[in-house]
Length: 101
Image (tube, rainbow, N blue to C red; front, side, top):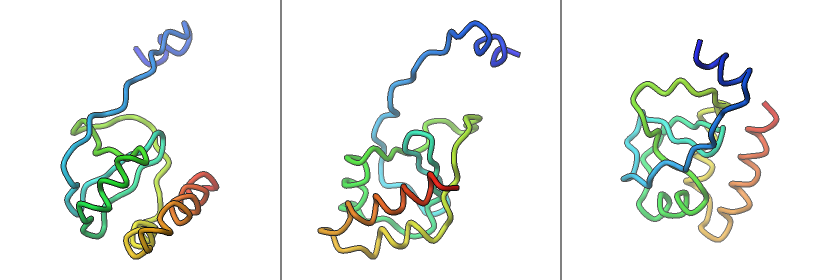
């Protein structure tokens, strides 16, 4: 009900990005804006640091009811296997695939 009321009166407030957390465990989810990705592979500290700089964060609450675009599970593996010099290009392709769906 509150959601409908806020939409009708256009009183939504933009949220600040979630704080940077530790490296996410396999089986959890990470978010970037309105895109959500399940962690299906272990993420190294180096890759997580790069992902944080790219805007990725751990999901800040246990029961997150926000609407996200779900990324297919295999896309994280592409990013993990990418050479560090090619991460930006691979990330751009992954985000483009997420926007298509």
